[in-house]
Length: 416
Image (cartoon, rainbow, N blue to C red; front, top):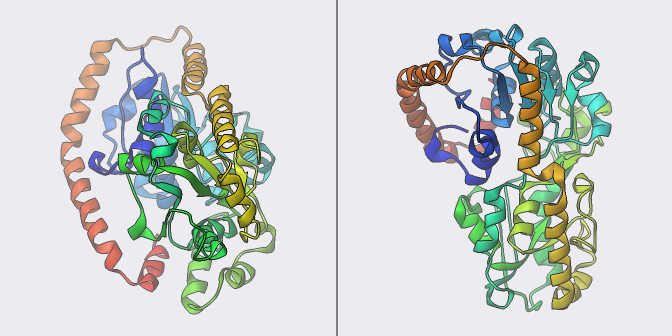
C-alpha cells in the first residue's frame, strides 16, 4: 500500500483486516515495498497472509531476482500460507506459478469460480484450498458508514459518479466504467432537472473519508461491472500490448484487442462485486448499475436500478428516481442483502481462516509472546530507514507522474 500516509481508508480496511479485526493473535505487518529482514524470514510464524497489494509486487517484480529471493523461505516454511488476491486475470500465469512453487495453502480469487480453471489451473490441481474471495468485506468500519449518510431529503445531489481515465489495456469493462458517466449526462440532455456531480479522470477523483461523504450526500450513484474482458497471461503479453499502442497511438480499444491480444484471451467476463457497491449500500445510496453478475449478490430492480450500457433506457431510470418509495425499497433491500451475506462478513471470514490456522499448527511449539515482541521490535528498528526512503520516493513519483506525457508513461511500463 506504500507509506502509511498514502493509504486509502477503504483499501487499508481490507488489506489489514486480520490485524484490525482478528483479535487474540499477534501480527507483524510488512510491506512488500520494503526489504524483508532475515530474522523475520526465519521466525516460525503460524501463518503468512498475503493480500492483493503484495501480489501486485509479485506480478511487478516477477518470481526471480533479488526481490523474489527474499521470499524463498515461504517454499519450505511450515506456516499456513494464505493469499487474498485481486485482479486475478492480470498476469495470471505468474500468479498461478507463485501459488504452486511457493506452496500456498489457501487462495481466495475474486473472479467467479467458472473462471478458475483458465486462470489458476496449476493451483487447482495442486491441492490448495481455493475459495471465493471478494474485493472488499463488510467490516465494522463499513457498517459505520451509515453515520455519514444524510437524510434523503437533505442530500445535495440526485446522481453522482466518478471514474478513472480510459484503461491502458484493451479492457471493454474498464472502458464502459470510464465513459458511462458521460453517456448518462448526454442521454439525459440539458433539461433533465436533476442535480448531478459526474466527473472523470485522475483530477476528479475523491479519496479518503471525503469519498464516503460524497456518496452519502447523493440520492443515487452510477456504476458498472468491475473487472476485465481480457486475460493477460504474463508480462510478455502485457509488454506486447504497450508496444503496439506505442506504434499505433491512434488505435482504439477494439483495434488493440484484435491486433495485440491472443484470440483465446478475448471476450472474457472476469467480474466481481466492487467496494463501491458495498460502500453505497452502507451509505443508503441508491445504485444505478449496468446489469452484470456482481458476484451473484445484486439483482436488477431488486437491489439496483438497471442502466443500459448505451443509456438507451435513461428515461425509465429517471422515472424510477422520481418514485421515492420504490427507491427506498431498493436501497433497503440492497443493504439487507449485503449485510446478510455471510461470505462478505469479515468476522465470519476471519473466524473461519484462523480456525484452520490453529488446526494446521496443531501441537507445534509456538514461540511465546516475548519472543514475538522482541522480533517485531528489531523489525521496526531496522525498517525505519526503508520506510523513510519509501515515503520520499512515493512523494516524488506522485509529484512527477501527472507531468509525464501519456506515451512516456506507456514506454515506462515496458521496462517493468
